[in-house]
Image 1 (cartoon, rainbow, N blue to C red):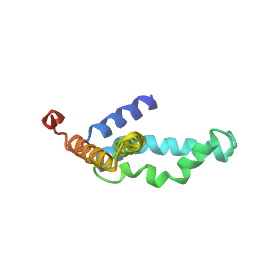
Image 2: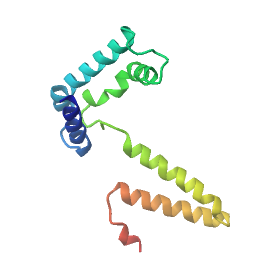
Image 3: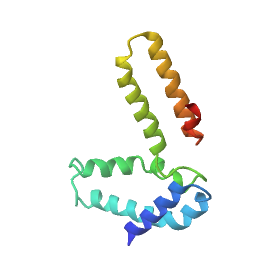
Amino acid sequence: MKEKIIGKNYLRGRLGGPFGGAYHQEHSKPVMEALKKWLEEQINEHKIEENSGLGGPINYMLNHWQRLTQFLHREGAPIDNNICERILKRAILHRKNSLFFKTQNGANVGDIFLSLIHTTELHQENLDLLH
């Protein structure tokens, strides 16, 4: 049951729109409070060892709870950081690929094209215009 609620709220958060403050206060906050209570029970009642493979992530969540639940308090706050991760992944891939440029000028041109492509994608423009 809770998995369905979490999935539904995650999808709404990913779709954007007016699913911030009030929506998440009503729908997501009770689920997150129940999750926090469960996490604290696991550690406090020694159901899970703090230094175990599962205890580490639970402690991480509890230690960063305020930051992990910002979407409950800020209108329009993203429910995840997938956009940032995609940006970093592209930059890392470009760094790896740039090892094979033969000249500094070629590397500079590659940087310009990466910047253009990424900017058009962020603004949801049609990349076919670049051809």
